[in-house]
Picture 1 (cartoon, one colour):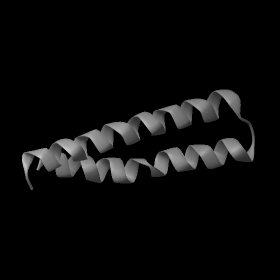
Picture 2: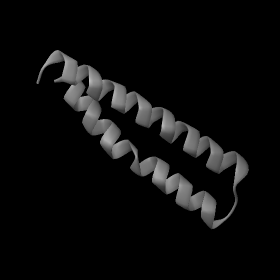
Picture 3: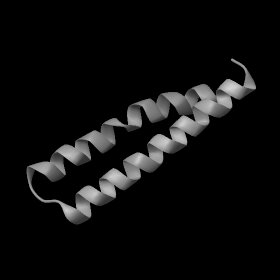
Picture 4: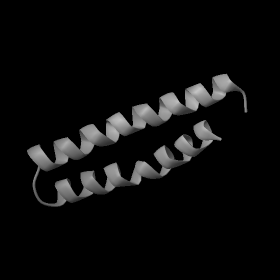
Amino acid sequence: MSPMDKMWASFVAIGLMAGASFLISYARNRTRGVIRIILSIIAFLMFVPILLYMVVSIL
Protein backbone atom coordinates (compact mmCIF):
# COMPACT_ATOMS: atom_id res chain seq x y z
CA MET A 1 0.00 0.00 0.00
CA SER A 2 1.38 3.38 -0.96
CA PRO A 3 2.04 6.10 1.60
CA MET A 4 -0.73 8.25 0.10
CA ASP A 5 -3.25 5.45 0.56
CA LYS A 6 -2.14 5.10 4.17
CA MET A 7 -2.61 8.83 4.64
CA TRP A 8 -6.16 8.68 3.29
CA ALA A 9 -6.93 5.66 5.46
CA SER A 10 -5.78 7.61 8.52
CA PHE A 11 -7.92 10.61 7.48
CA VAL A 12 -10.97 8.36 7.16
CA ALA A 13 -10.25 6.90 10.62
CA ILE A 14 -9.92 10.39 12.10
CA GLY A 15 -13.20 11.48 10.47
CA LEU A 16 -15.04 8.41 11.71
CA MET A 17 -13.62 8.96 15.19
CA ALA A 18 -14.85 12.56 15.20
CA GLY A 19 -18.28 11.40 13.98
CA ALA A 20 -18.50 8.69 16.64
CA SER A 21 -17.42 11.13 19.34
CA PHE A 22 -20.05 13.67 18.27
CA LEU A 23 -22.72 10.97 18.07
CA ILE A 24 -22.03 9.58 21.54
CA SER A 25 -21.87 13.07 23.04
CA TYR A 26 -25.16 14.01 21.39
CA ALA A 27 -26.80 10.77 22.49
CA ARG A 28 -25.76 11.20 26.11
CA ASN A 29 -26.59 14.90 26.41
CA ARG A 30 -29.68 15.42 24.24
CA THR A 31 -31.62 12.17 24.03
CA ARG A 32 -33.36 9.72 26.34
CA GLY A 33 -34.70 6.21 26.20
CA VAL A 34 -34.50 3.99 23.14
CA ILE A 35 -33.08 6.70 20.87
CA ARG A 36 -30.15 7.12 23.25
CA ILE A 37 -29.43 3.40 23.21
CA ILE A 38 -29.67 3.19 19.41
CA LEU A 39 -27.36 6.18 18.87
CA SER A 40 -24.86 4.82 21.39
CA ILE A 41 -24.82 1.42 19.69
CA ILE A 42 -24.28 3.06 16.28
CA ALA A 43 -21.42 5.13 17.70
CA PHE A 44 -19.75 2.10 19.24
CA LEU A 45 -20.21 0.07 16.03
CA MET A 46 -18.38 2.83 14.16
CA PHE A 47 -15.27 1.80 16.07
CA VAL A 48 -14.96 -1.44 14.05
CA PRO A 49 -14.07 0.33 10.77
CA ILE A 50 -12.04 2.87 12.75
CA LEU A 51 -9.91 0.05 14.10
CA LEU A 52 -9.50 -1.47 10.64
CA TYR A 53 -8.48 1.83 9.04
CA MET A 54 -6.06 2.46 11.90
CA VAL A 55 -4.38 -0.91 11.40
CA VAL A 56 -4.17 -0.32 7.64
CA SER A 57 -2.57 3.07 8.13
CA ILE A 58 0.02 1.67 10.57
CA LEU A 59 1.07 -1.35 8.51
